[in-house]
Image 1 (cartoon, one colour):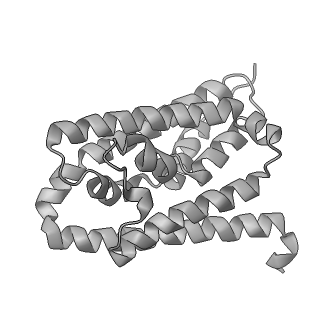
Image 2 (cartoon, helix red, strand yellow; image 1 turned 60 degrees about the horizontal axis):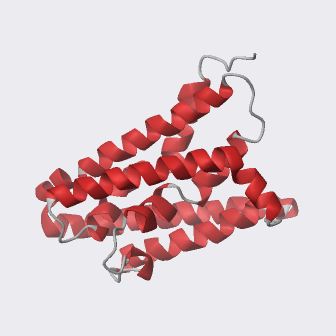
Length: 204
């Protein structure tokens, strides 16, 4: 049984934290839970955390099999998912909420908070890549990393309420646009990276 090196778990946590966009969660969370009280928001946060964990762990163990079954190239999957995230980010920037942020009266925990916001195309693709060659305790480290980052995302969502009270409406409006721009940049970067991976000649 081969053990990952000492820095493997930390490196995996950092990679997941960045690609899942944990720090961009508050404005999206506040937007889709607008009008809810604290108890309802806590419930949505917990449901989102559970959905994220299930999605990421499932992607880790069976994601590559599902892509193979439907003959989907992983880079095409990344691009398609990034376009969905870009649509949501554009709505945040312009102040015109994307239809993706409209849960039609239902809980926004799974869509859009868990998917595609947190367990988005990049995060799912990373989970699939991590699970492609499981080896010894690497599986345990990978699953631990997924759970730790999910808990960090949960903490950030719990902190959204206090952030809202401190910033007020004007501050939230600015924050929403700034993080929408960041989210759009992440989506565009994901698309560009996938296209270069699929068409290596474009990098020259």
